Image (cartoon, rainbow, N blue to C red; front, side, top):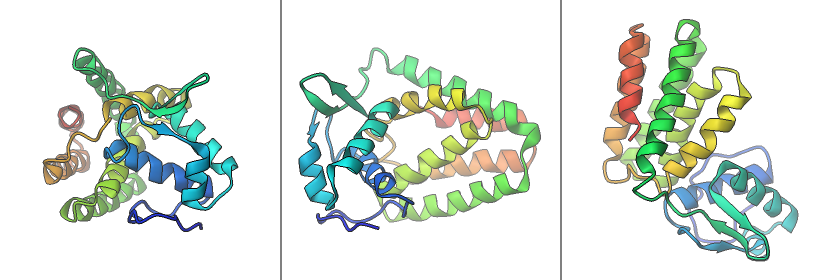
Length: 210
């Protein structure tokens, strides 16, 4: 596990590889606005910052570009993607709602105890992060909750559709003024799932996405 050569608090959880750790740091910084839209990310600077070679940096930037958080332009380098304009934001929100509500409705009859265990544990961590105003962890747990629902379908194509939509929509993370409200909304989704109320769970998930 590398040690970052900067004063930024190490809030994202530990990941298996150097690339995954760098991805987690940079993703959190983009989504929380520490890296602003249009800002250029230079491989050499990041390699010095994290104390690694340029290989893992290049791989991390490629992954974040594929996720839709960064934009790579020929002869211009890699930049942070700009937030969607107000004109298209309703469309992005609607697309995300369609994917996630489809996913939850599809998996509802197959939800198992280990799924509920994951969501309950996620809620606890999300609550702590919200109380502490730990934005990187808030973003991490928020995305993990929603990703788990989409991923549970077991179709990589659905993840490929969802990921750029959710990251584009969250540029920057838009629930920062009312973190506990977002946590409570997640709690109500899980409560409806536990109660076996498909329609209510799907509707609460739809309302959470805004």
